[in-house]
Length: 329
Ligand SMILES: Cc1cc2nc3c(=O)[nH]c(=O)nc-3n(C[C@H](O)[C@H](O)[C@H](O)COP(=O)(O)O)c2cc1C
Image (cartoon, rainbow, N blue to C red):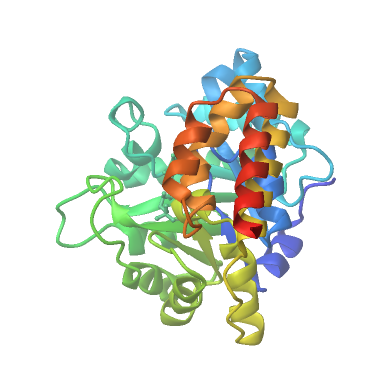
């Protein structure tokens, strides 16, 4: 699939998209497809380390690989060296992503402490220069995903920073409405996304604590943002995307997934992960999703425990079949 032009990206973002957030070890090709099938309008890869990418590391290349049907999907890169980021941006073009996203929000000390991710927020001028270099180095639209600030500032840098990023050609900004110091704790403050949206004319995407379809609608309406990005809630409940689409487009509250749909999603995710990664790895990486998928089913806790101790696909499918038979009895 060809990458998006700037105009196509704007058009996509004008439809109030609900977007699957980049999440390391979560938003691989299998999970992106699953979320897209459940209504996600746009996906972003896990972040890709530019040093690994430029060294030709297989892991980095695999993270960046995008199949023709995996569209629209953006590639996200991270690094601390502007020249290397710009070089990696050129390389990323080969994967034909929808666009290129630059991670300026990762708070994890081993990344932010080395100047990558949210480390850039400590040096706004350098962050703008880096973004300018990347924009110049590639024909792909370049977006930035960042946070409201580093920490204790009474006045967050983000509004002015967003204006400057727009000035150097950044095509859209995703705002995780927490500081870097907050990590994933505390409440995301969407009002910052509203302030940024008022300050720039490029699309702004609001992110942080969108846990239900109602949250997605409220986040978009309260902030006036172009779209909403969903992270952790999608791990447990990928149905959120179709639920949000129905609510945003039609004002309709979809009923929750049925027990059969919940069990069906467990089967599908297990099968797809095993097809992509073999046993037992494919089974093990699916486990983090199962608690959420099974939520509300009678006997869910016991069922989850049974699945946790089973490393084979056939064994897991048998457990799920027995659960389905019990529910039907
Ligand atoms: C397991 C996990 C991995 C993540 N990996 C990335 C990443 O690779 N790139 C990125 O920009 N953000 C990453 N994030 C942050 C999410 O994209 C998102 O900004 C954050 O979780 C807030 O949204 P939420 O409240 O909807 O989860 C990650 C979050 C989690 C929970």
